[in-house]
Each structure stands twice: as structure tokens, then as C-alpha cells.
Image (tube, rainbow, N blue to C red; front, side):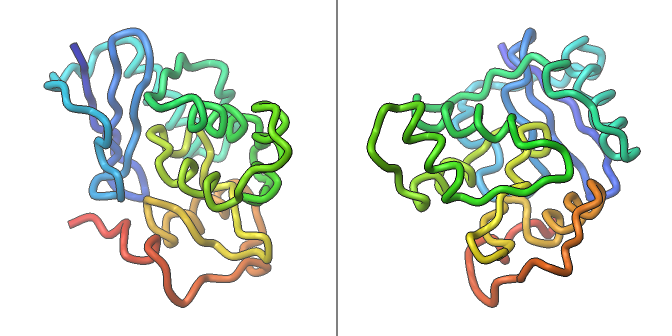
Length: 185
């Protein structure tokens, strides 16, 4: 059985989903891939301890603190490749950026491959089911492009600014799929 709660953030409502013991999903309402891979019924349960822990983590995050990912039990659903990418995302320090290419190099090492496609990594990053906590917003294109955030570029910029990143050095793409998401209706 799955459980959910809503977290009201300064960037809009966030749905948090748990399998009772772990966080398995966290999405801005209306973001790309919202509830992807979740076919089970979900019961509202605001007082579930793991969901309360996730809300506390988000309170700390949005207050400009640096909550530790290790303080939450996460169990994103995905194949081995995606799980490898998401684990590497968890290693990106608060307020720092990395590129899809840098993650691809790390994935290649972990998977014992000669190389890995940055585009394949981008697909896995984009399908991250636990936004913010698994910090996919800290990944940019090789030339500082703010591409690839399923919650929308506007939210990506605000999350990075919250973490103290100088976003003036980054470029907003003129076209791309991430530009059309993130407007909560």
C-alpha cells in the first residue's frame, strides 16, 4: 500500500509518496512524469512518520538550511541504470553544480563501461522520481545550460538560488521540453 501527503512550498504544492517505510516519490504538482511508474492506489496519510520526516526535511531545505539526504529513507523505483544515476545525483553537494557529461563519466566507471552517453544520463536525470531531495536541479548542460528539469526551468532557477548558486552564469535554453512544465494550474 502507498501513502501520500501534500507539502505546501514557496514554489507550489509538492506531492510526497511513501511505501510506508521509504519515500518513493516527490513531485511538484503538474510536473513532467508526475506519478510516473506508480500504478497503485495511494491513500492520504498526513501523519505517517516517513512522510512527516520528508516534510521536516523540506522545511529545513526551504529555510535555507542544508538537510542531509541520509536523514531520509529513499527507495526510488527504476532500472539499474537509473538507480545508478540517481545515487550519483545524491552525491552532488548542496549549492554546487555538475554536468550530464560528468555524471556520464561516473556512471561508466560504476557500470564498468568504457563510456556512457550524456543524453542517456539526461533521460535518467529527467525521470528522477524524488525531486529536490535527489538533487537533479543541480545538473546543467556542459556550457551552463539550465536544460532538463521536469519541474520547469523557473523552479530549477529558484532552487539553485535558494542554495546560493550564482545563476547569472547559466543560460536559459530558448527551446526544450523542460520549458513547458512547472506551471501549476
